[in-house]
Length: 454
Image (cartoon, rainbow, N blue to C red; front, top):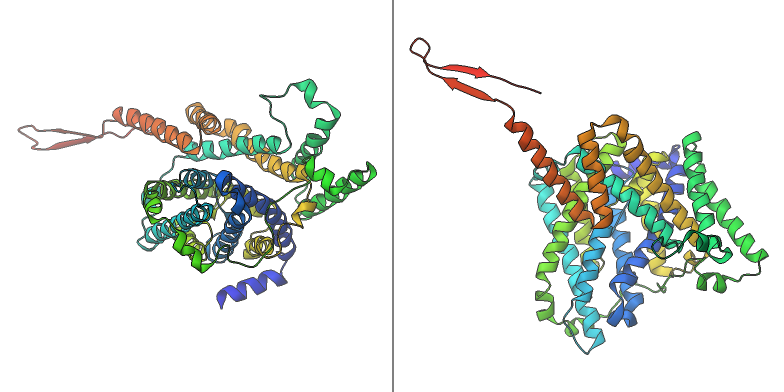
């Protein structure tokens, strides 16, 4: 009843429009991202079941986003499958040892994905129920900052890649060719324009109004140039998805007989890896959200929310997920700290599951890339530019090293390097502190001299 009252109050308050705006925009971007994850996981030998696999990822995103939106301590939480977790799913799908029968390979892969979601959810529930979050909560400030900065760089790189810009393969003159310029220039202009607009004004209408205006203008320009929708999708100018509409489930109950349980058992190490990677990812995203919003979250509650989401998503034959800092921060930036934001995002995921991605096919790719560029630039401004004036040079150097490691090697490697360096610095500092000295004399049996240095 409290939740219903809270949602009703948000509907009747000024939170409604920001929640709808951020929820719809993140829903569009998140749907495109989840479809891309599905295409990565269910590729190669699993390509005949690409649509079913993509729907699995989207349906999991729907359940995870809805559950965490309603149960998280942060009211503007937005959730889906994180990048590190999706990479483990790609490894699982590519290493399934089933030969010959394509249906058996798909059903076996889907079974491992489901077990991974449920197992991760159960572990997270145990962390929350037994109040063990404090054991993993200690993350140094510089490590969390490096994680955020590295995420910002990767978002910018992903945005440019989405627009067909790959610096290692292209030179500056080639980027200025008309065909190439048309792909990246609108997204870069939109991303930088959004950064400048949000710095100058704090109006909640900026995000939805700019997105809608830019999309309409983009389609008008395409029509003026005589480029049809199909031609634009083939050229990578409009989103082209693979999810076909249809009611859940992606496979029949009789397909369980095709599961190769020996191959499932062989994936136990990868399932454990998925649990650990997701655990670290959740911890880093929660730390980043606390730093960015200047709030203190109740981590045990957040792990219970993520655990319940994982179990429900798995039992619903979907992939798991968790709170995503890079999207949740939009709730803070645009005044959408309402549970309605996550509900709207989840409903958009659900609509793609039921109706397919035909509506997403109208979304210009440069706008999706521009939004990612806006997020990345905002994080870099906060944690590379401004942090230089706020942190000691040692912590700032650690932050930069972690960010560079994340970009070049990966999230886990970056966090591991950061924790290792931080522990070394802590050990060196501790070795220079004379904590307690004890001495005995005939006149004073025990003398304690305590020295504390900072």
